[in-house]
Amino acid sequence: MRALLDGLAGALAGVLTGFGVGGGGLLMIYMTSLGGLEQYVAQGVNLWYYLPAAGGSLIFHIRARTIDAKTVWPAVAGGLASAALGAFLAGLVDTNLLRKLFSLLLLYVGLRELIAKK
Image (tube, rainbow, N blue to C red):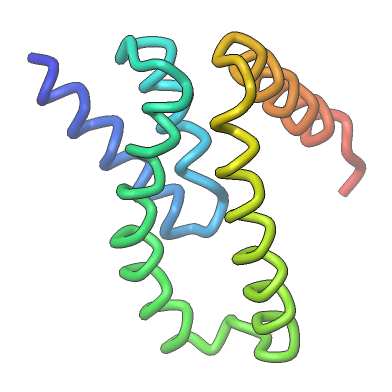
């Protein structure tokens, strides 16, 4: 049963990743809240999940020409450097604090989306 739930959560997160809206965030919530994984372990699983999911959706975004090349390379450079720093720092932060910070981030983003004027 657990494998079925994990697969369904991965599939739903994959659809959201394909849309480019951060399916990994949903997967993190599932793994820490329902899956019983520690925050740091869930982050590692999420990174492994993200590689093939992002690669697959990237192919379709390239085909549809929905990627702005002028924006990609600076974002990639900054993302690689800060991801390495973030991974290092995450290993130093208490798991409970990390979970609370992640929850606050999700709450902030959710509230911002609810009240944002389109």
